[in-house]
Image (cartoon, rainbow, N blue to C red; front, side):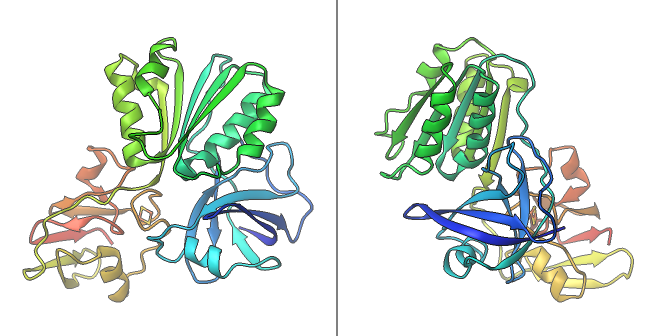
Length: 318
Ligand code: FES
């Protein structure tokens, strides 16, 4: 864990701020690669992941970009309403689940909304490496966030080009079929945005015969699947180590039920993206709603922050 101080908060658009964090106990911070993120531990107890957008070579500070999410569960709202210059925060060391390949081939970057943050870091890295790349940036905001930085790295890299698509998807002119049609098949694709945006890019690329190995993605927000859940019938969780049976309804948040019963479940994203809350279960059925576990893993693992109970009981290996 690293203690940092908020040195600068800058408005990038009406609802996005960038925040510079300087280390308190050292001069330099750990190095990182483009696409990396840090966990930010907020004073209200929430832990959130944010991509690093600071220059890779400048280890004096980290910078993150934060959207004021209207559906915030206390992370981005706290940052936008309460955080101020001079505040002290604790952060994790950088982690990277969205790394650039290390070839010298051309790259296609796609960003939807605040999904620009890890893509921005890749854009700067590709400029430093003078690598051929295209950035396609869809945003609903008339004042395009981070455009000054995109321009700076465009000037550095004559082999790069970018397009912004402003407005909603039906009228912004973004045509993924045409973009892929003009690119060599299996050009590496990096996409970050909402689940719907990612699926649109991925499905189109797969339909145009891209191999999935060449499609790299990071979702910043899980979709909310509408489940028809019963809020009257009683279900229960059984804890292996204690035999404790905890009643709950299908609509209940399993992580909250466990925490209230005294079984501490660490949480971070609270929407099935980070994996922090993952638990083993040995019996029962669930509606899995996360973005990180595959079908095989769902046989024994689940994320209680967003999964819902399906069978009468599930037995949890706690
Ligand atoms: S807290 Fe992130 S997946 Fe559950």
